[in-house]
Length: 312
Image (cartoon, rainbow, N blue to C red; front, top):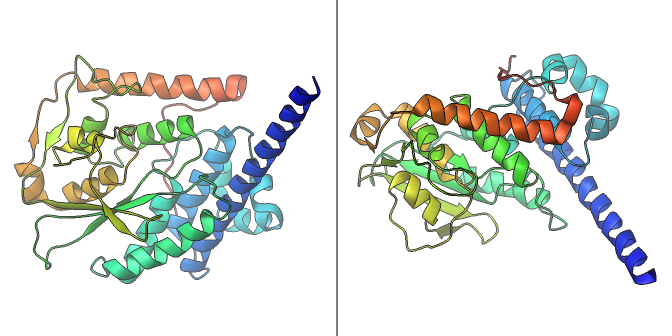
């Protein structure tokens, strides 16, 4: 009995430590975004606030805005009131570090690959102190229409959430909100949460051979990583990896989505299987998302099928 009691105490202490890491990282990301915006009102700061408050709301344990922002609550609430009004009723379209990446790319210019990597890595290293995984992206991806150094670069990061369910909810939201390009969303929605392919819908795509898509690990000094088997299944990327990560969790979907949104010719050359039964696939993803939210929030779940639109 004593051993069981000691084990339970140790489990609770570890739980509280992890909970504190969530709060710490949430505040770090918000402060970093505010610093990058130089204190000016920014649509990206508005968006990252909403995304983080949403993730705190569905987290176990749950975190209120007061828990996350401490003494800075009134300041942020005064400057960005809408995230505080909508985090418990409207879904975000993307995870927090995706907002940070966009801010950095917009400040430095898409051609400054090294600077973008280094600036984001500085934040990731701070978030990972204590070996925590809360709100952390592990990989970054850069895609180009072809191998030419003159072509535009499009970036993406892996899902920066907290726990398996919140990651799945955010992947679903990125698909359903149209944040991800329709081709990318269709490919991701082809697979069920158990990683099995849907029998009635196949939205997988085959990118043109000349497309360049490279992922890099934040934890291995920006070492290039081959696409996982999941991304190979989704996009036709060549790989030697047999690892199957949860579909949509990697950095490639966001990076390739940005590529396809901006490079019309690449999208036209990409081969898609079918758009038949897409609405049925979307409804399935919606129902899965609603089920997970109800399980997390019980009678406190107030979300409809509405996404948050950030404003300045």
